[in-house]
Amino acid sequence: MAKTSVIILNWNGEELLKQFLPSVTAHTISEDCAVVVADNGSTDGSVTFLQDQFPDLELILFDQNHGFAEGYNKAIQQVDSDYVILLNSDVETTLGWTIPLVSYLDDHPETAAVQPTIRSFHQRSHFEYAGAAGGLLDRYGYPFCRGRILDRVEEDFGQYRDVLPVFWATGACLCIRKSDYMSAGGLDRRFFAHMEEIDLCWRLNARGRGVVCVPSSVVYHVGGASLGKENPRKLYLNFRNNLLMLYKNMPGKRLYLTYAIRLMFDLLALLHLLMQGKVKSSIAIVDAYRDFLLMRRSYREKREENLLLTKKTLLPGEYRRSILIAYYLRNKKTYNALFRDRQKAIRNEN
Image (tube, rainbow, N blue to C red):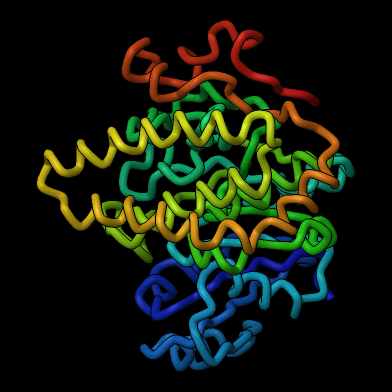
């Protein structure tokens, strides 16, 4: 068996495979690292392309689209490796990209998961929205990154080269111990897609298993290949899953105050979309809240289990203020500006 399996989940992504899979196979130079493609019931020519052009590549075939979360859960169950790397099909890798990630996990048994620096494929000097140099979460559950706050993405000129514990690592390129993945319950299949990696990393951090950004490994991500940034379905999943994630993981003393303030912020977002004429996006937020309320009861046992297993309540990469207020009212547009007085705002525990 290979020590590490790089798993690419594909659904009708033949063109992406043609563009990016050659770089993955060429740049994954460790002899103890295998590249695996798990196909989520594609109906295009993906499978034929893989069988014709990459006959030696391990191929896992599913008969339907299980979504990002359950697709990876099923694929990871089928590989026999110590480490697995979840890699989006729209990622261009660099030579030896897996080596710093695997080496860090080898040397730090207390760490469950790591991510590389994620740069933009189209604007290569800049970080990429979906992960940048590691993910954080504000006190009301809004995620942001070292290198990306809200929609403002920074240029990468070496300002975030330190290895740093973070709140979450991006699902675009997530290297994790299989044992930690399985013991934490994997990705939540009911999320289908979006926020599932943040939910998983919350569970890992809360149980004392670290999540870290290792910037010496670099990949380039296109982003938005499955659902575009303005897609109402994507907006719906982000809002619904974020609310469910808070319910699953946040201690009770904080949860209900958080929800009250979130409702205010999200109503403002809804009104802003309406003023822009984006009716479908506004409806998506309403639908997200409706379905969250309908689904919440089914998560009660999972919430109790997560809180029972929680060892830490102040987590690395947790911003103890509002990122919206910091950005819009205090004009804090970058990570370094936000955390200039880091001790007042963040807990990073080694």
